Image 1 (tube, rainbow, N blue to C red):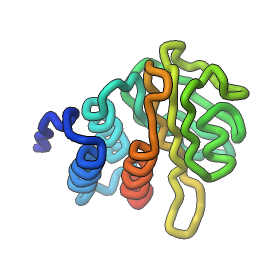
Image 2: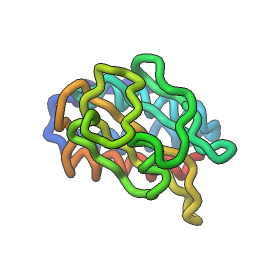
Image 3: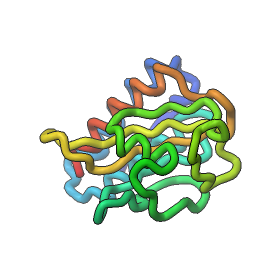
Length: 161
């Protein structure tokens, strides 16, 4: 059984290093991608301070389809280039948005979300698999350390999809 400790008060670099360690341990022997994403979303949501949503969108049939998450009910399907998630998928690059209301084409799945970071999940052979999406009810919540930490976690999960 996995027992996490309260790491939310750690300095950000230590927090993400510990999250990566915990998530890697959780997914190490598990081959089911849904189980791995579900555990990852739960660990992120309950460990990173000031979030209101953490989860996954998976590439299916040419669009992004909602996967495991923690938070309010979310948009089920997102097209490429739509919103933060669709833009991250289309560009295959992490998109960090300080104020989602200023992002052209933002999709307001949860009106409480004020800032967002979306990390594309890419296979070893460079195929897009999906997007890790994290939202906060605070403006300008995410910085370069969050981006680096979530990208590392995205690589761990990508290897299990």
